[in-house]
Length: 151
Image 1: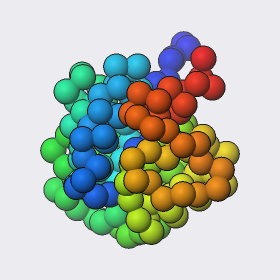
Image 2 (image 1 turned 180 degrees about the horizontal axis):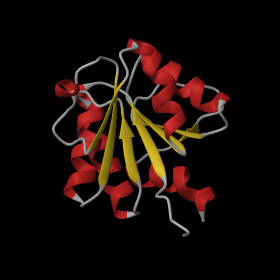
Image 3 (image 1 turned 30 degrees about the vertical axis):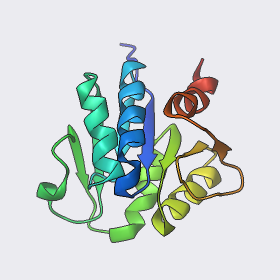
Image 4 (image 1 turned 90 degrees about the vertical axis):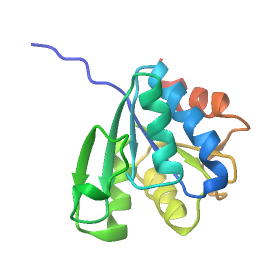
């Protein structure tokens, strides 16, 4: 039996000031049929998943700790890792593409890991500048750039 697997896009970043942009990214991804993957906690991560759920989408949270209760309420599927910041590799690897919204050192690590893995990485709204990442000026452009090579 042949199954169709949804495209997964990891939305990474942090910062309350970027939540509106992250929510819009999550909504747009869900409208395109993508599963939205995040680190599962608050701020940008919660906002992206909130946007995806508002559009009827599916979400996955990859948590740094060992307790599912830590996940934001918009997470459909929760992966507990117990490996702290090392879970950044799982977040980067789980996305067929990665969109960074805001962020700091953890976001830089995730962007670099995703690029090393050959993922398309798009930087939006205050995301750190990392060589190899595509730059987007709006959530629409970020989603378009992230999904362009999927046809």
